[in-house]
Image 1 (cartoon, rainbow, N blue to C red):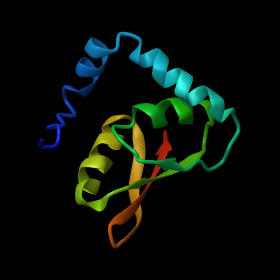
Image 2: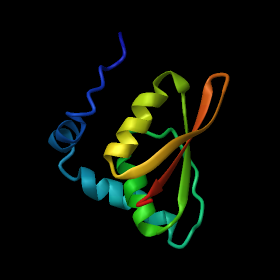
Image 3: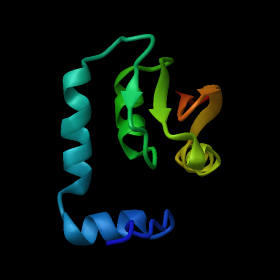
Image 4: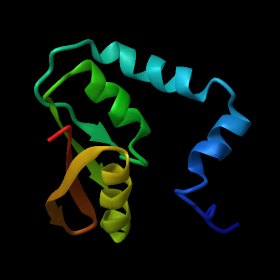
Length: 104
């Protein structure tokens, strides 16, 4: 079985068609992070949907995330399209650290 072909342009439509409460799920996933943090670490960054909700709860916070580097450029593009300022903070071996900040 091959890897599921990911299409970032169709992602939200796919998620909401398969999971009608997708946005509620994202909000519920962000809720336990509380509020007022200055730095948050996300393991396995994706399209930026979860970081958007987490960063809404922590204005001005930086959110570095871990990602496999073979698709870091795609990751930076997705985060940017989601309204986050993102950059490659570090890359070594088969791990990359992507930093994302909302509204900078």
